[in-house]
Image (tube, rainbow over all chains, first blue to last red; front, side):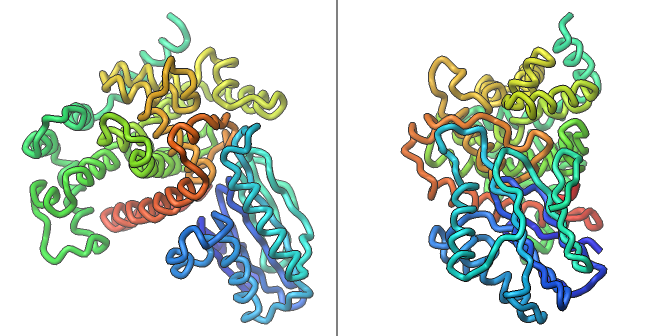
Length: 158
Length: 293
């Protein structure tokens, strides 16, 4: 069954019948994690880098921001038995407008923040499809760990 | 007759803007209009009134007693919110269907349009256009040209998408080169046919190039910023994705920086979800328009 991960949302699952799917990734980032040993998957669709812009929103919904959402995603997967060292991590999104001046660089800032958090915590990115001006749909199969990215009707494995 | 005129002629026959919307826009556009004028503009539209009352009475608004008439709704929501709700209801029939060319599923263009309308209201506090009340409507209608293009030029879409991908063109520029006009231009022409106020026509025409005006227009800038925010946050993105040119001058004109943009984004998403829930509650089985493709 398709489990939809909305904007500023995250889902984890240990049900092999589930696909975690997030649509319409623009400058937001989609983070997919999967532990092949216990076959637990998780997906986060965060919108903005830092919770400091709205701490009360972050308390109500940590998945809105990278710095609160990423730790929350990993913790939720640990509760289902996943282990950090085994986790396969894939990232998509972080698009921007056609913008030579970096006026609206939310996408880039989201990605920089994600790299920083991963680096601090010793997490490696196994594959990514980041940047450009595309809208992306990200899909993770909980049974197989297969991640696909779709845009403009074309689907490729990540 | 040019291709643009041909398409407009065909559109004029099949997709008139509901009379209630036209009346309401002229009421909103007139600073001297009173609540009674608004009630008059809505009262005779039974379908609208019924749907409006269903939404007001939905669990979502949590009202303690039943809202039974438009006057009640006005008291409950306030004038501006009522007008916004009416506009959102009306455009949902126009914008709800999937836009194949743009690879937008059912409900997605409406979702994007309502998101831009909400964000326009939020940005208007910074940009201070002459008539703030028009911000919502201008935002709601900014992409009306997509409805037209998607339905009437399906076969040219592949070529537009190809040129965007291979030549790195902005989507509206590729539309212009392939078709001779963009979705912004045909939307503006349609709005002129519907006799919408010039201020709204300008927003539709220039929502991707505010610099195309002889001098800056705060309402156009408002819709431009709102559209950028919704594109960035992925509210109803289609095959055009984020392939539009950013204009740094607009943020600078109002001393705006990323934190303000981010806060507007958060506010927009929160309110958009409220609107979607209210509509879903009122429509029963109809799903809450998730971003499904």
